[in-house]
Length: 119
Image 1: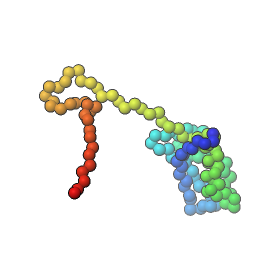
Image 2: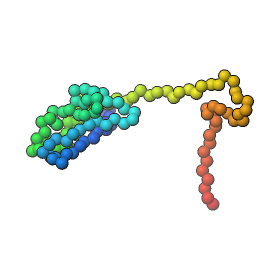
Image 3: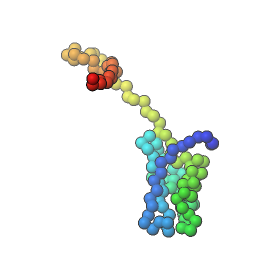
Image 4: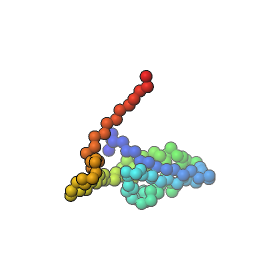
């Protein structure tokens, strides 16, 4: 799908033996995302790619890894947006409380903001 941009948060752990050993790569979904497990990403977000498994310090590098992730994840995104929940509707009291001198439902308030400047 050309022309569509996906923001897929990832985390790369660079080990002290880098570049001789491959980094560990994870998908790190935001609060409004969930991981979509596949052959390339497990339910915990760990990324499995042949590029990582066949890491060769003479030819493999982080830019190549990111390029492979872009190609792979553009075909099969590893995250999806969580369904948005409608905010709960406040329960309506059966009878108004006559001892309360103010409205009890927040939706009945009118809030105005103003800013004051010093002269």
